[in-house]
Length: 297
Image (cartoon, rainbow, N blue to C red):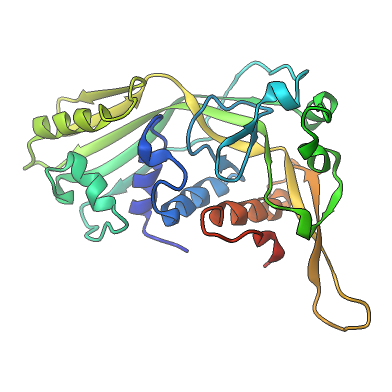
């Protein structure tokens, strides 16, 4: 499922612009969304596709929409003070040698490239003013309201469910990473940077871009910056594992029978398998597959 890094980086920059229509799950190619998932999977994180003030204790569905808020499901949870961090790393890609943008990206790049992709030579995305907020597993368990959110009972209490009853995972956020974004667009020497600058401003004005600033530097570079931190990615509190079995007397291959939710650990290797199951569900959320947890490869 690999595609060129240029596609990943362009989508990462565009998808993380708050209010951008391009950030909406299902609003563009699912292959690009898959690449964004792969980018954050290096740290066992799920990306926040559409920032909506997500916080620790919120519950998301696999499409990235807020399913329930902290105040509903964990009413007694007191959020910790934000801690400074640098988990979100800078990404940069050269566009000069990439001729095939594909998947509609030439249209996106042309917004700031005089109608042709060659005017933009490099994109760099930097996350600044980073911080994160987290809660312990015990804090989540002790403040969980089963009366208000019974749909989380098996997840929080760690009960095994028959695979047939699992529609899709719900993701309880245990740690949320926030940052401002800076997208630097390097324009070719022969391009009219002033004209490109006006195109970027015009494109952002098409949507609710009140939290974005556009600058034209002294050189051939345009900067698009968010003026306030927004949620970028999150760590999930409870991860699924599959339980397999065979039908007695058939001698057949093991099949997935149940799904058991367990608290995330501090060991990335142990969490990777559970996150893989979640990523599979996210990958297929808009592809019509109802239960990818049936496969465990």
